[in-house]
Image (cartoon, rainbow, N blue to C red; front, top):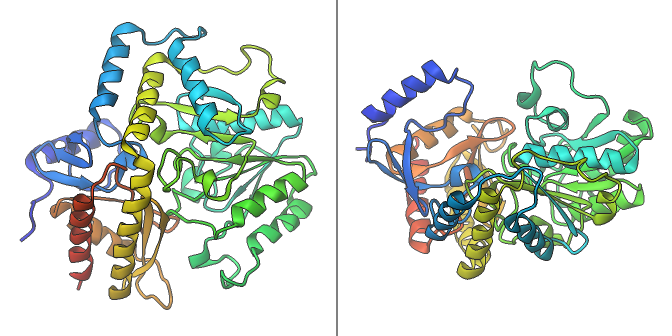
Length: 434
């Protein structure tokens, strides 16, 4: 018998209300409604308890409602909330902290509010600085839902039926090695996706290329990681072609991959690094890290954001860094990620439906297929696993280019016991499929 009968009566009531008043365009993953959370645990409105494998969609890296985080927010709300157009101690000291921990060439910080705003600012600034207008992005990429960010998207679902996108946006294949766009072997392809960029430039650009934007891994398309060294070569390609390099770390930063920033895995030095999600751990916050030489072309006040860098967001972000420093969350991400990935790889060996397991640190994707030989996507099987996991007390969600990937991304405070318990639930559900 399942542990929970879902949805519970209160969850059902709120879900019906959502359908009636929210229009049906908002996301819904599992059949329950969150009520409160602490650490890696969630409780729904019916009192059922779950281990969270989503981190509230990769936001609450320091865990839900961490006491130090909550206290910092409460104190700041009582002091000062938002003096738009005026600096505050919270904002300028936080900018200093970010400059101190990001790649050494990134010596300027522009505080904004959302990930979309940060990536949008990066592309806008790249155009302004370079005097050029074209942007290369990649198949499967996701950089937000605002105008320029949506134009850079590599997924149909992000821009499907929204009409013409902005001109000057060019797409190139990303190294999705499990489903290589060139049907090559990852170990011997010689980074074909990278070599293909030269043909893209010759055939699709007007010779006015400002920047290349990519994620260190493609989150929205199913946690697709490029092979080791690919990002290093992409950065070198950008430098060779005098093109600015934007590394979109909105999702991958703040310990998620077992490093504070994913750029650290290959010692990358991008010209722009948008940050978001985990930066505020639930409080809307984002930032764009860039180089002072780039910021020097702007007039004072030319770059602004109404709620960007507000004192409450910055107080929350300060607290996040405090927690990282005091609780060694980057190290825990790497350690727990190694354990959990090992468990998932064992499940892959035993299950006929789990085609691929990939990831670094505490961000992994489980890609489901109907047959491991044909690799035909199996979103129906994935949803059966997701729904059954919910009844057993494990909260996970769907993602992926083909809608067939389960995200495995718990808060970075997850303990060994919690990692084992959650993997036990997943294994029982997965291997119990008919």
